[in-house]
Image (cartoon, rainbow, N blue to C red; front, side, top):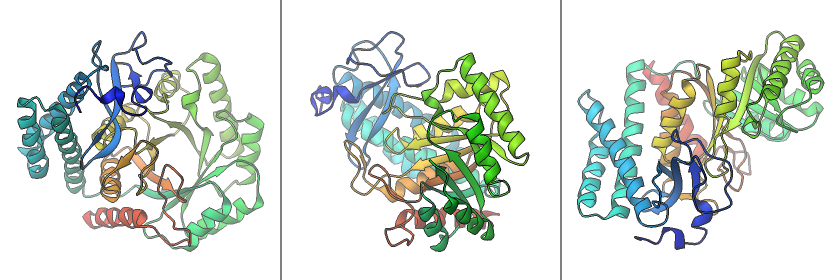
Length: 397
């Protein structure tokens, strides 16, 4: 593998440059690092892991040879070691993670960077999941969290409601155009005592009048309204903040009881992040109640998910996490070798954050994500895995 990363199919096209905090830089046309790059993300195919983006700090030349594997291995080896050393002495079960970490150390000494990276990622992921599980046990569970599905059509939402998904406590509707069927679906969700959220998805910044009319049309049915979606596409400018402030005021005027949400996707693969816009909103005092963060399984390891949630949690807002799950066959260049194990780990990590108040997954499968429902509207193994985590969490209380 040494020296072969960028000669693989799509090798150079999959490089993603970041700043020192791991924030994606805008799309680069060349493989060489643009000005301001201080980190690099690249998906290395690893046994027992699969292929998803991994991240390390950047040093000139390290993305052009096996030195990239060296940098990635060093980062995950150090991260896993820090978690294991700190929390094993506090009673967190770290035996499995420690076995991978010790194997990684042996490969490091032998300068077998690819093998070291594989074991280091496994160690980092397993230590993050073990820590999440231990935190939940010490918390006595996370009693205030909602488990939900995201639907792009009223019929999909109704199918989810009628399938009686175990542990389902919330639904989120992506509304592209007005449809009376949405109102009927919302009434059905309310009858089942589910929390209902919604978003207008025609553009990142909806027209203020359109948002007001939608909120008024579903007044009393929708508790969580997205003021804007896909805000990672917006610049953190004064104009953007003014528009978001206007939408916030319109939403509150249309229904004083709604909770206002800002939605964004964080993605190395897609070259964008909503962090700077959200940070600007918080600093400027734009009134909103929740962040809805969307994240795809191929955009980092489970350890990276843990670190990402910590970073967004520092903004001081409750969070809804929208997770896209790895399909059995993977997607394009990406795959996870144990998708259901990934779902369990991701759910535990998100659940262990006190500021995460909801976890959503797609109701229906897409090319790049598994879903909660089969084509016959029965629960998928993915949702069964989520329901098991939810049941375990309830037992803790």
